[in-house]
Length: 201
Image (cartoon, rainbow, N blue to C red):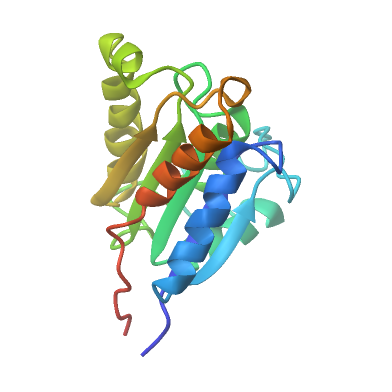
Protein backbone atom coordinates (compact mmCIF):
# COMPACT_ATOMS: atom_id res chain seq x y z
CA UNK A 1 0.00 0.00 0.00
CA UNK A 2 1.33 3.42 -0.95
CA UNK A 3 1.49 6.06 1.76
CA UNK A 4 -1.02 8.83 0.94
CA UNK A 5 0.47 12.25 0.30
CA UNK A 6 -0.82 15.59 1.53
CA UNK A 7 0.31 18.82 -0.12
CA UNK A 8 0.20 21.48 2.61
CA UNK A 9 0.28 24.99 1.16
CA UNK A 10 1.03 27.99 3.39
CA UNK A 11 0.52 31.55 2.16
CA UNK A 12 1.75 33.96 4.83
CA UNK A 13 4.93 36.09 4.77
CA UNK A 14 5.75 35.78 8.50
CA UNK A 15 7.16 32.51 9.78
CA UNK A 16 5.79 33.20 13.27
CA UNK A 17 2.28 34.17 12.17
CA UNK A 18 -0.83 32.44 13.45
CA UNK A 19 -1.29 30.99 9.97
CA UNK A 20 2.23 29.55 10.01
CA UNK A 21 1.80 28.17 13.51
CA UNK A 22 -1.51 26.65 12.50
CA UNK A 23 0.01 25.12 9.37
CA UNK A 24 2.75 23.53 11.46
CA UNK A 25 0.10 22.03 13.74
CA UNK A 26 -1.73 20.74 10.67
CA UNK A 27 1.51 19.25 9.33
CA UNK A 28 2.04 17.31 12.54
CA UNK A 29 -1.58 16.17 12.63
CA UNK A 30 -1.43 14.89 9.07
CA UNK A 31 1.81 13.05 9.81
CA UNK A 32 0.17 11.38 12.81
CA UNK A 33 -2.73 10.33 10.57
CA UNK A 34 -0.27 8.54 8.30
CA UNK A 35 0.25 11.04 5.50
CA UNK A 36 3.55 11.89 3.87
CA UNK A 37 3.42 15.70 4.01
CA UNK A 38 4.84 17.93 1.29
CA UNK A 39 5.02 21.42 2.82
CA UNK A 40 4.82 24.20 0.24
CA UNK A 41 5.53 27.52 1.96
CA UNK A 42 5.00 29.93 -0.92
CA UNK A 43 6.93 32.78 0.66
CA UNK A 44 9.81 30.65 1.95
CA UNK A 45 10.18 29.08 -1.49
CA UNK A 46 10.07 32.55 -3.09
CA UNK A 47 7.19 31.69 -5.40
CA UNK A 48 6.54 34.40 -7.99
CA UNK A 49 2.78 34.97 -8.31
CA UNK A 50 3.03 37.20 -11.37
CA UNK A 51 1.50 35.86 -14.56
CA UNK A 52 3.76 36.00 -17.61
CA UNK A 53 3.22 34.96 -21.21
CA UNK A 54 5.00 31.69 -20.43
CA UNK A 55 2.14 30.64 -18.15
CA UNK A 56 -0.76 32.52 -19.71
CA UNK A 57 -3.37 30.00 -20.89
CA UNK A 58 -3.60 29.42 -24.63
CA UNK A 59 -7.26 28.59 -25.21
CA UNK A 60 -6.41 27.05 -28.59
CA UNK A 61 -3.79 24.69 -27.10
CA UNK A 62 -4.61 22.50 -24.11
CA UNK A 63 -1.18 20.90 -24.42
CA UNK A 64 0.79 24.11 -24.03
CA UNK A 65 4.10 23.57 -22.22
CA UNK A 66 4.23 25.97 -19.29
CA UNK A 67 7.29 27.37 -17.52
CA UNK A 68 9.60 24.99 -15.65
CA UNK A 69 8.56 26.60 -12.37
CA UNK A 70 4.85 26.10 -13.03
CA UNK A 71 5.46 22.51 -14.15
CA UNK A 72 7.38 21.75 -10.95
CA UNK A 73 4.43 22.95 -8.89
CA UNK A 74 2.01 21.01 -11.08
CA UNK A 75 3.94 17.83 -10.31
CA UNK A 76 3.60 18.47 -6.58
CA UNK A 77 -0.13 19.05 -6.93
CA UNK A 78 -0.57 15.95 -9.07
CA UNK A 79 1.38 13.80 -6.60
CA UNK A 80 -0.93 14.71 -3.72
CA UNK A 81 -3.98 12.75 -2.61
CA UNK A 82 -5.06 15.61 -0.37
CA UNK A 83 -4.43 19.35 -0.78
CA UNK A 84 -4.63 21.54 2.33
CA UNK A 85 -4.25 25.31 1.99
CA UNK A 86 -3.72 27.57 5.02
CA UNK A 87 -4.01 31.30 4.38
CA UNK A 88 -4.98 34.64 5.93
CA UNK A 89 -8.19 36.11 4.57
CA UNK A 90 -7.17 39.48 3.13
CA UNK A 91 -9.75 41.76 1.53
CA UNK A 92 -12.24 38.92 2.02
CA UNK A 93 -10.31 36.68 -0.35
CA UNK A 94 -6.99 35.03 -1.09
CA UNK A 95 -3.61 36.73 -0.56
CA UNK A 96 -1.99 37.75 -3.85
CA UNK A 97 0.71 35.08 -3.65
CA UNK A 98 -1.90 32.34 -3.29
CA UNK A 99 -4.11 33.73 -6.05
CA UNK A 100 -1.04 33.84 -8.29
CA UNK A 101 -0.24 30.23 -7.42
CA UNK A 102 -3.72 29.19 -8.53
CA UNK A 103 -3.44 31.33 -11.68
CA UNK A 104 -0.08 29.92 -12.75
CA UNK A 105 -0.30 26.33 -11.52
CA UNK A 106 -3.96 25.34 -11.72
CA UNK A 107 -3.76 26.05 -15.40
CA UNK A 108 -5.63 25.26 -18.59
CA UNK A 109 -4.93 21.75 -19.82
CA UNK A 110 -3.72 20.66 -16.38
CA UNK A 111 -6.45 21.51 -13.87
CA UNK A 112 -9.30 22.24 -16.27
CA UNK A 113 -10.20 22.46 -19.94
CA UNK A 114 -12.45 20.33 -22.12
CA UNK A 115 -13.45 18.12 -19.21
CA UNK A 116 -9.83 17.17 -18.57
CA UNK A 117 -8.32 17.61 -15.11
CA UNK A 118 -5.45 15.88 -13.35
CA UNK A 119 -6.99 16.88 -10.03
CA UNK A 120 -9.99 14.55 -10.19
CA UNK A 121 -10.33 12.24 -7.21
CA UNK A 122 -8.31 14.42 -4.88
CA UNK A 123 -9.64 15.87 -1.64
CA UNK A 124 -9.13 19.45 -0.57
CA UNK A 125 -9.39 21.62 2.54
CA UNK A 126 -9.14 25.40 2.52
CA UNK A 127 -8.36 26.86 5.96
CA UNK A 128 -8.73 30.62 6.15
CA UNK A 129 -7.89 32.86 9.11
CA UNK A 130 -10.27 35.83 9.15
CA UNK A 131 -9.67 38.90 11.29
CA UNK A 132 -13.34 39.68 11.86
CA UNK A 133 -15.54 37.86 14.35
CA UNK A 134 -17.77 35.14 12.94
CA UNK A 135 -20.85 37.30 13.52
CA UNK A 136 -19.40 40.23 11.59
CA UNK A 137 -18.11 38.05 8.76
CA UNK A 138 -21.40 36.19 8.36
CA UNK A 139 -23.51 39.36 8.62
CA UNK A 140 -21.64 40.80 5.66
CA UNK A 141 -22.17 37.63 3.62
CA UNK A 142 -18.43 37.25 3.18
CA UNK A 143 -18.34 33.66 4.44
CA UNK A 144 -20.80 32.59 1.76
CA UNK A 145 -19.00 34.53 -0.97
CA UNK A 146 -15.56 33.18 -0.06
CA UNK A 147 -16.81 29.62 0.35
CA UNK A 148 -18.50 29.69 -3.06
CA UNK A 149 -15.38 31.05 -4.73
CA UNK A 150 -13.14 28.38 -3.20
CA UNK A 151 -15.51 25.48 -3.81
CA UNK A 152 -17.42 26.13 -7.04
CA UNK A 153 -15.03 28.71 -8.47
CA UNK A 154 -11.80 26.76 -7.98
CA UNK A 155 -11.98 23.25 -6.51
CA UNK A 156 -15.03 21.67 -8.13
CA UNK A 157 -14.39 23.64 -11.33
CA UNK A 158 -11.10 21.74 -11.46
CA UNK A 159 -12.63 18.33 -10.74
CA UNK A 160 -12.22 18.17 -6.95
CA UNK A 161 -15.63 17.21 -5.60
CA UNK A 162 -14.66 16.50 -2.00
CA UNK A 163 -13.79 19.98 -0.73
CA UNK A 164 -14.15 21.68 2.65
CA UNK A 165 -13.78 25.35 3.57
CA UNK A 166 -12.90 25.87 7.23
CA UNK A 167 -12.76 29.46 8.49
CA UNK A 168 -11.25 30.51 11.81
CA UNK A 169 -12.48 33.91 13.00
CA UNK A 170 -11.14 36.71 15.19
CA UNK A 171 -7.52 36.11 14.25
CA UNK A 172 -5.92 39.57 14.15
CA UNK A 173 -2.67 38.65 15.92
CA UNK A 174 -2.15 42.06 17.51
CA UNK A 175 -5.41 41.67 19.40
CA UNK A 176 -4.88 38.21 20.89
CA UNK A 177 -2.97 36.92 23.88
CA UNK A 178 -1.26 33.57 24.29
CA UNK A 179 -4.43 31.75 25.30
CA UNK A 180 -6.44 33.06 22.35
CA UNK A 181 -3.54 32.38 20.00
CA UNK A 182 -3.56 28.74 21.08
CA UNK A 183 -7.32 28.59 20.46
CA UNK A 184 -6.78 29.91 16.95
CA UNK A 185 -3.98 27.46 16.17
CA UNK A 186 -6.12 24.61 17.50
CA UNK A 187 -8.97 25.89 15.34
CA UNK A 188 -6.75 25.71 12.27
CA UNK A 189 -5.85 22.11 13.13
CA UNK A 190 -9.53 21.18 13.41
CA UNK A 191 -9.85 21.92 9.72
CA UNK A 192 -8.23 18.58 8.90
CA UNK A 193 -9.79 16.55 11.71
CA UNK A 194 -11.98 14.64 9.29
CA UNK A 195 -9.19 13.59 6.95
CA UNK A 196 -8.18 9.96 7.12
CA UNK A 197 -5.62 8.20 4.92
CA UNK A 198 -7.12 6.66 1.82
CA UNK A 199 -5.29 3.65 0.34
CA UNK A 200 -3.93 4.38 -3.11
CA UNK A 201 -3.46 1.62 -5.62
